[in-house]
Length: 137
Image (cartoon, rainbow, N blue to C red; front, top):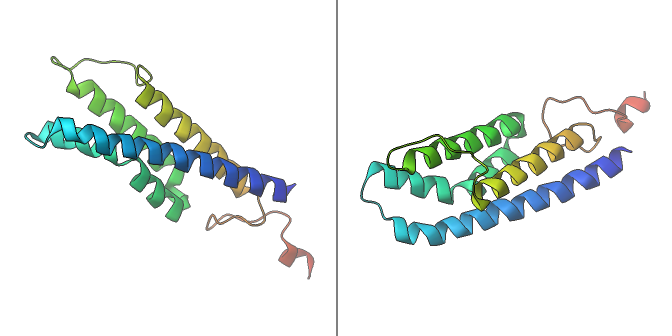
C-alpha cells in the first residue's frame, strides 16, 4: 500500500510541477507588457513569475510545504485584488490563472498527504509507517 501511495504522490508532484512551470512561463511572457515602473507593477511581475521557484523551495523543505503554497495562493489573490482601479475584492478563481494555481495547490497538498504515509517518504520528521527497519528488530 505504501508503495502505491509513493507512486501516486510522485505523479501528483509531477503534475503540480508542470502546472507551476507553465504558470511561471506564462508569467515571464506577461511581464513583458507590465513593466517595472511602480512598486505595484513589480509586485505583479513577481506574483506572475514566482510559481515554479516557490514550488522548488517547498519541495526542497516539505515541512513548510503546504502552508507556504497556500500562503502564496493568498498572496496572489491579494495582488490580483489590488491591481484594479479602484482596488476591489474579487474571487481568486475568476480567471484561468487563479484556477490553475488552485488546482496545482490541491494536487500538491494531496501529494504531500500521500507521501507522508509512505515508507519511502522524504518528509523530514515524520515517522514512517510499516518501515522495514522497525520490523527487523
